[in-house]
Amino acid sequence: MTDLAAFSALLTDEGRTLLTALRDYDPAQELAVASRLRREHPAELVTAALGQARLRQRAVAKFGEQDAYRMYFTPGGVEQSTRRTVAEHRAAAFAGLGVRSVADLCSGIGGDAIALARAGISVLAVDRDPLTAEVARANAGALGLAGLIEVRCADVTDIDTSPYDAVFVDPARRGGRGRIFDPEAYSPPLSWAIEAARKAPHAALKIAPGIPHEVIPDVAEAEWISDGGDVKEAVLWFGTRPGTVRATLLPAGDALATAAPLPDPPVRPVGRYLYEPDGAVIRAHLVAEVARELDGGLVDGTIAYITADELRPTPYATAYEITDELPFSLKKLKALLREREVGILTVKKRGSAVEPEELRRKVKPKGRNSATVFLTRVAGAPTMLIGRPAAR
Image (cartoon, rainbow, N blue to C red):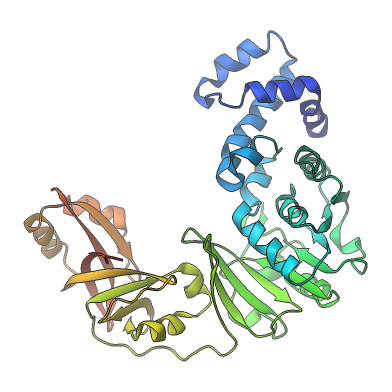
């Protein structure tokens, strides 16, 4: 049975019934479950249903239970789809620009198309893989959005986007050997996506968060997005605020933006508080803006840790109260932790080659208290900063 035929079988009444029955199944019991189901259903259908059930369980983290158990997935679709909170943020941004129709190029299984449609935007979702396009079409139907989402199996370079208010491009950034770091090796290449974006009144291009700032075109606005503290993606916006860089922190939606980034903050001695900027702030090169807000400086010119003497509230960094500053020494750290009966040890590092798990294994923390140790450099010297999360 081909992949398309197997997927089509899942859309039958028998396939849907099987998937409903498998919602809460334990993958560890898959052999026994498969043997039982094959007494009543075709073996190929059972295999397809079990695979889909596993994918739905994995997809809950990105789409939530309500959507994940109604949607359909491919292995690559689960891995590469935009997280729901991020897709909803982008859809709201398009809606805020007055966009009513979007050509979603490289749409995958339809995660972004779903968010756009739910924002009241009509979508042309294009993907060149026949199975992926069928899955996207099934998802639009399963979520009651077929009237707003047209799915087309085609090469995105053949699509006329002129009838649409906006273009969204999510190039494939993975190949047979894993993650692709060269933007011109994306599929389609970043240069093609930029040209497609320039032709539209508004556009957004999803790119890897680690993209060098120097390859970002002057006519674009660059946004780095984190969700729950984890950097998820970067987006180039066209038709908005050229030259602006922005860090957006979800789920709260706090955003820090500037068209004229500040120079690097000064390096200063470690104060009472250490601030760890959100990853989106660091990727957007906006650490200086946060340091100014905190009246702080850097512990080292190459390290994105901010130090200050006062505790000030900010959504853009997590604050820690520092109790000790020591030259790097496992022996000294072990003695200090033993003296303070620290058994719960959080290890963070920036600018250190020591792995947190390796350090934790060597110092063998034991006791009823907790602490956080930062392995870093202070004015160029390997240093350990010991502290705890600051009281809010």
